[in-house]
Length: 327
Image 1 (cartoon, rainbow, N blue to C red):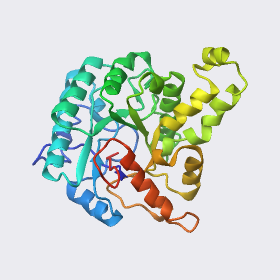
Image 2: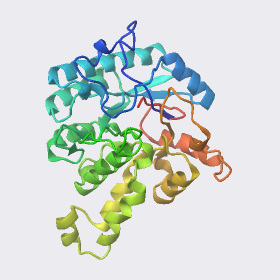
Image 3: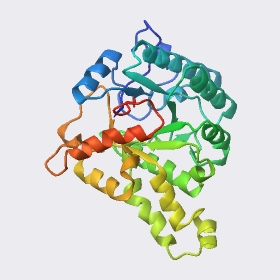
Image 4: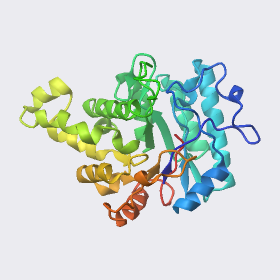
């Protein structure tokens, strides 16, 4: 199960709510969404309630990038990963983790933490955010290729979680960025990877998109359909990809269903991508799913839920009923 939800992880014995441990002198999450409380015991309680055997923990946006200083980012990423590994080691049956990374535009620092997290700590994969820096460096950007090269070489699982858009202007005070902007950010990052042919050039990685891919399943035809009758050379020159290649890249992503398990959303997703590429998720590990976010409603076959949970076994992760992330 992908159970998303918590604020900063802390070292053993530290108070999770002491912001000086992680965010000082940063100003916190700029998305407008309050950071929920989280603890291993609350996560285990929810896992038991949902029938989840194992959870893969990760830290949500902005992660170590909450700090502006590159040295501070690297230190915070190391600290988060050490604590996640400590949780896993204390209860290996319940927890694994996706590693946190410093700003991946700093390729040397990111690659060093990838090596430490995967080789020394035994992380199950890494978490990337949809963009980095003030200039909207999305995941298909050429500057990020050293990181993708390393992840592909290691055949790593990459969990992509949205972060706030480059501009912080909210539509209204009642609409934090997580409600509408996060799904669009996932779509921007995915389309950037599709047009940059990131997955084709780095085929070793398995990329999981949060929240059923954001708005990507709804909008992929806007990219692909006009290319159907466009000559390949022209299509590649204009958009960076062709019709068949774009759809193949779209279907090669894995999709978690955190906050996206209404029958209408699932039906669209399952009509467009392989069932084996849909994995179960919960949008906030501190809150139990509400009825509209379950897959057992009268318009959806309950057997579909079993399919979603079991499909995670196709990923190169620990044998578990699903993945649980904190976001």
